[in-house]
Length: 266
Image (cartoon, rainbow, N blue to C red; front, side):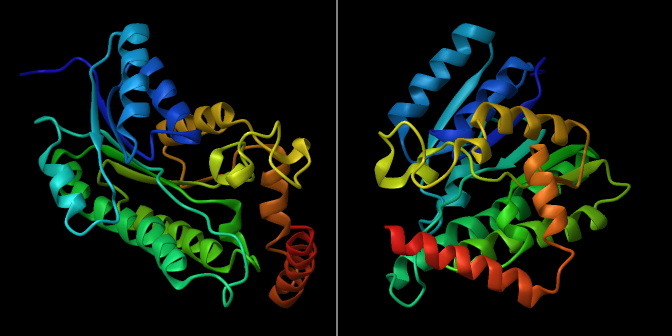
């Protein structure tokens, strides 16, 4: 059976940037596989996209950190080629490393690093065999420098960035591309945390908080252009560039100063 639309799988598609990514890909004529833990939210989104764009939209509730979950997920995919894999699912735990619970920190590594790596490894061979495909990994501007009080989160995103860059070189000439998108603070439940009902993310000036729809559109454009690294927004482009110029001890010292100040406000 032939399908007129390309197919994209988007993880973390029940909230924040993931929802907006689904909307952008659907608007651009992609059939979708939505993957996240919250089935009700995904079913609502899927029906919205079917009605608005006439696409096929499959909902697969899944905890990507559960043992064997990714293998089971891939066994449930539609029997057709996957054109785009978007590794968007992620978690951010803020606070001092020693004072936080270990399982929360390990969960970050499991979802942000291990699940992303396994899903990419399992999806890539079929793309290589076809000679076409795109892999999109959501990293963060935190990938460019150490971030005290977000030490594990920033380290996971540094992995995502480095992994994407290395893999993009391995994939040259294959027809398959790998893109890392590195947004800054974005108005999502991850940033709002327990204060998600507030009008803006706590302790952050709105001038530096990106709209998730903007980040999603930038992500789609970067994927279609087969960019290796893309930082949405001029402010964050400048910040990510400037952070590479000073010595690393200076970067981490400045980050630590702001991190401690922010921690005291909570």
